[in-house]
Length: 408
Figure (cartoon, rainbow, N blue to C red):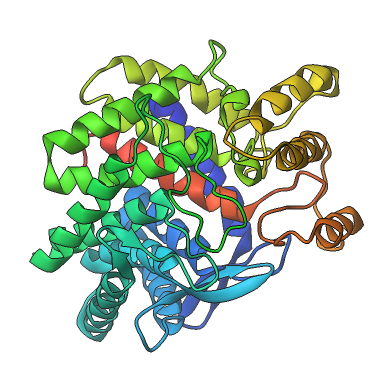
């Protein structure tokens, strides 16, 4: 499995490099579809380069670090940059913070000092975003308690403690992990949210993609705190992920109720990372991880597709899958029907391909007709997605170093 994962990662990194922009002392990844430059994407790319190539890529590592430092806000945060909005985010600050922590051994002199100062400010910003015990505010636009956000903020704080020995950061990481585990369902699923916040309806439904996301970031807390209660929580969560995996390795999306994360290709990368980490406790999970890699490969023609591809001949069967998904959760019938429409919209979209979706008329019509946030409904065609690609690079480079027994 290690050899196949390494081969896949080398090819994906090579394809991603086509979108690497180098200007004097900075470097960043530019989105080939939307033309935007996301802080998270460059940060995830940076993590992957460090894990796979280390100091042999010191020059590009420094340039990526310089770019990220130039994007930090005065209050220590980094912005979440989306085709439809751009705002400060504790979530994205945690992603970038983790990348900078990983980069520190490759830095020296003034650049290292600047990075350490930036990290202190990021640590302060993330801790200031904790509005209840372990509940970290994602951003001003998205105010619900998203358990994956708590886990991600906790992961950055845990890694910050690992580097700097900061006890306050450690306690923040523990509070975040404890909150996530407190709201875990009896069957092991993590609901996407545990309150309504700025959402119109509660999103306390299971989600295959965000189950893997939450487990992945909890693993980065657990590698530091080594608590039995967190191990038990993660094993329950990993077993839920195993239970929604079919014999052919694919996920059973009828068990996933979050429509805007429906069939996301990144789910397979987060699944691999989650299964690989849990394999230290039970080796059976390596088999589950191995089944996911070919599916990820199928959905990577160059860089990674936004959604798992589908075949038109399977469309009638997948309508039944969508019906089951839409009926998950305690919602009014009218909203369940809307969810069904959304799911079928996604079933169609993942079967159609385009490299240019910026001027998608169906997308504009649907969002206007239903008054939906444009961040939670996406174009009507599948497309090569740099955002998804960066998540896959991060997850698989982490999983590969774990399998090799190297320090993260």
